[in-house]
Image (cartoon, rainbow, N blue to C red; front, top):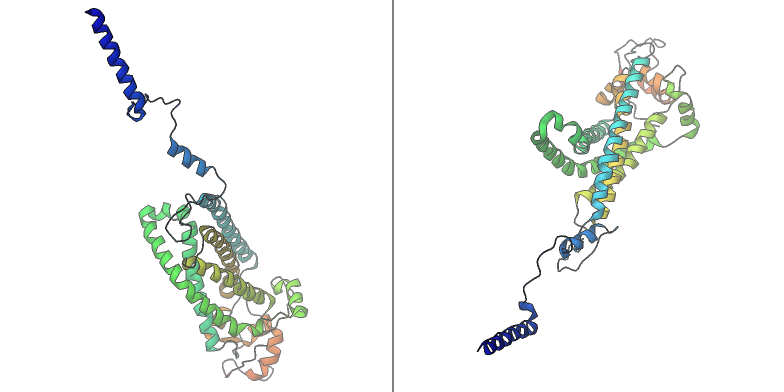
Length: 345
């Protein structure tokens, strides 16, 4: 009896093993072992992240970069922006402001030689002044909002807090995006009105540069626009063109731009804008606080005869007759007459 029972048990076990061999899927999984068991999903993404370029997959989406699993260049751009672009831009701004402050201490405000004559000469027409102020106001707004977006996390969050800065950054981005195209139009308008008088004249402009623009004693001859003004005009025009084109690419990401394209134009836009802002500090200072009587020229359109003789003597010699004669030599008293001259050569 015991032999029959033993044989029955052996046959039962054999049948069980046969069933498991015929159905391997039903076999229970091996016990997990953290040392030897791999995670295929983790290995896949680890492999993707270790690649140098973007890994493209297959997708039914037709949008640009839809097949990119992970945009590895985005992290590199972020690191460059945070570790190089922002710190260098901040240092450059502080250095330029320091140079301007030092120049102010050394040179002070530069008065008109001989004081005010009382004779006014038309230097800028109404059309020119409107174009200048429109472009200048847009430039200042775009510059401030751009610097807010570029440097705000480091310099404004400690002041306004994270939530306050989020509102400020949102408003800055809105103004920056929508005023950019208007700046393109005003810059074109400004170029058309002022390009004739800002054409380079090497024989005169180089001498002006060699004499330091007359800022340190020696008089510098100049036409309607001196070499410094011409330099700013062409820098603002060409640099502004770079800023406008790159800004439009960033403003309207609907023309098939890849992320790599956007990153490139973001870099170009930032560097060109910072350079324009840095040089504009000098232009703004010279046009407002450095030289007596300069700000009122663009404010009213008229310049004093002595101011014209000090800073644009070659132009003054051409237009002085339209403003009467030189003060005192012809007996003209200050404030008697105000003639117009539209000569801008």
